Image (cartoon, rainbow over all chains, first blue to last red; front, side, top):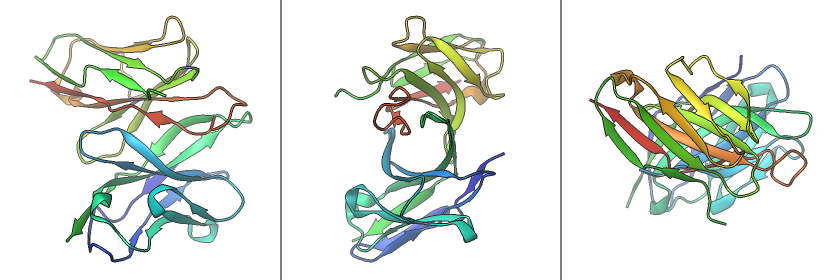
Length: 117
Length: 117
């Protein structure tokens, strides 16, 4: 069975500082990995995704993530955090069908990001 | 592009009552997914449809839960005889058909927050 671990429940950074959110996954085949962000009372917005190719992927809002197969990790990074980045961040792993369509996603428990002025 | 919409956004009910939620996917998205998110956790997969066919159901979807997508457009999720443990955010997502661009990505709605008293 697939699983995702986000070791940090809550992270606090100052505005302008760099950010790294950790994600470790367990999956029997080539993983299909996502990072989503959720603001209070909102649904989830996709930040970026990885399936194959370059292991460093760029996303929206200046975020990037690096896939490391040897460490089963897919950590999210941002060089300079803005106050508007305060939200909850979820890492997810999914199964892909042969058609390329996604099946169910398995999410981590999330990391709550607080940004100090 | 109006995005995925869900109705109602909030529902408060008494234990033992039945509730029904509606999800309208992005037009032309033939796949529709339901997830449940409890406080402090990531979303958990419940079920998904391709057109009107329900292709997969999680063991989380007890016999008190039923989901339908009769015409392959909007979907409803009904919970019968609600229990306090059903209190959660119910999220809907949709994705494009196999072979289409971004078929690997699920786009989420804002969710319906259910409170069972």
